[in-house]
View 1 (cartoon, each protein chain N blue to C red):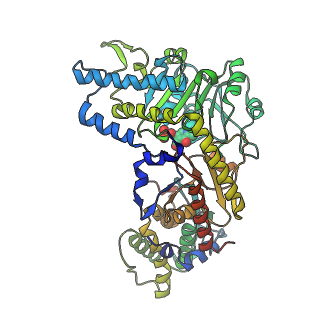
View 2 (cartoon, rainbow over the protein chains, first blue to last red; view 1 turned 30 degrees about the vertical axis):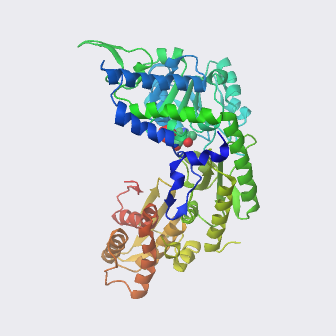
View 3 (cartoon, chains in turn blue, brown; view 1 turned 60 degrees about the vertical axis):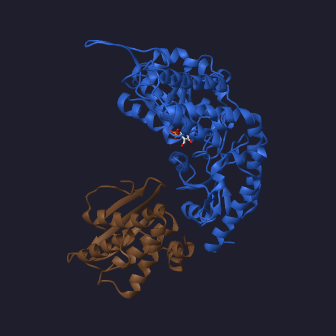
Length: 406
Length: 154
Ligand SMILES: Cc1ncc(COP(=O)(O)O)c(C=O)c1O
């Protein structure tokens, strides 16, 4: 597949958005969907629908096979050792809640410490905060440096004999910094510390090999990976998923239910209570095939070129200030304009069909640290081109004109 | 959509140089408000005298041009009014932003009404309505001073 033709795979770019061509620079929030994924959902509901894992009629068996087929595709895509290490959730948020909750139930004790970073998304902080309340667990934050990255020393500095879990972003959704997960895991495991990775931004944009990273858990958001909403994935090492208790109770996750006792199902059913996002799981197989057809190396190269180009033109635009300058950076550029609030920037850009995000991007800790209430963020996906950044720059200039800036 | 209607001169001017952006000395009522969606926050201070007249009103906080302008214009208009008059103006403003085409209150001068109507541009931008109303909701809670924090996410 030619990277120049990829945009054509996404029907939304045939639409006019308020009479404009869409310049979509909000993929870190959620990516657009290729036609193959959209069609698969339609097809499944039209011709193949049934619930999975319960009935023994033809459609139920076929749907179950399709559902499990996606699990195998995910396993291969992230190079997990075992298919049962892949758990479907409603999103990365639920995956992270699952980990925090079950570790809290069985593994963590009063006084234990959890190490996060100042780059964490609220979904990798709030679930741990619950444990602060319910189990008297302490949370520490590894600090960012002036480039908006987390050097490994800053992690090491905050590890204490009480640290039991390190929960970290793979790729920051604000500064774009890529964290050295493999190195962090090595240090952590030498001290018997569990490593939980929020891979929301890593999974769509980086080469993934969970065995090589050796992390204990890795959370994925499918809607940022050219897949449907309402779906996430938790990768967890088998020994942990077997040892930890279930998260939610209900149908599908049990083995035997008696009036006086319940035994739980085997992996992965143990963590998939109730009717799951069946159509989304089945369609997500197409997202993986789509990513594979382009090749992650090509995606990385393409996005790197885009980000370098975007940074270059924005750096030349005076009054634009880029947030962070990580050496190892993924597809996100956050910025502020002196004298214009990010919300005003976003509204004015929107008028030209340029979709960005403005706000704290669910990273209030980071924005507090940077002493700004909010920022504007342009983030890329496979379908973006350099001309998208030319348009961004042009619309920023319009914004400066309205606010009478030079 | 019309950016010119949203970013009128008056809005940009108030946004850049907000009036009453300070903390009232000896305030006797106050409240904080925030918009969790964007992290914007505002703190409104009031000094009501014995005749229940707003002797002074001020605010602190940060936000977009719309929210700063709205707080600025609001404090300008409310100063010197009685608490009942203030409530009428607030209702009128919020009603206008929500659905009414015009302001109805007879308390306000035509000039003041024109200023307030400059904020009506947000009606075309549903995501921005909260920016214009945050300080007003916060003022209500300051007047009631129930110690509750206003959040526009409710
Ligand atoms: C870094 C990061 N973590 C977590 C999330 C939450 O993911 P989800 O929407 O799948 O729950 C997001 C997306 O908003 C994110 O960017």
